[in-house]
Image (cartoon, rainbow, N blue to C red; front, side):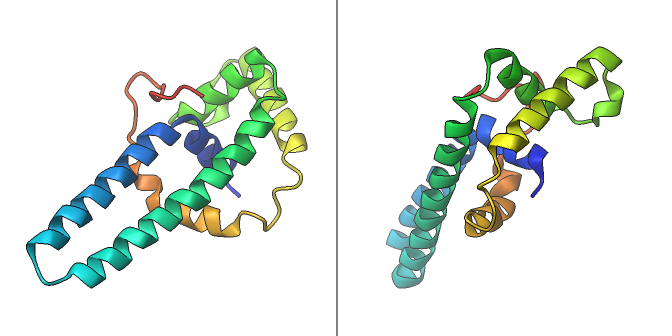
Length: 141
């Protein structure tokens, strides 16, 4: 499990959900124009199933984040949006982020193989999460 990817998904879930909605609309409109309606319907169902798996993953992560303090959430969000490694941070901030990551990891012990399918779906659609110039996604957690 790549923690940074998981955190970025949590904080940018709105953007990913919007992109998946756009795919559904595009497929639905395209199916009305040609003879591929059955194939398009199957593709739409796959995206809807993916949204369901990602929703379950987000709800699980949200339960973890509800137990963390505001400072930990802020640090984790900043880390998730970073394009560089922790080594690029000042020592005090690096320790703070590391501490928050450890708190997150301790609360995440039941993750196991429970979300293997969701992690595969996230891997497939991760590229739809747009990079943010300001380092913060719209949903903001």
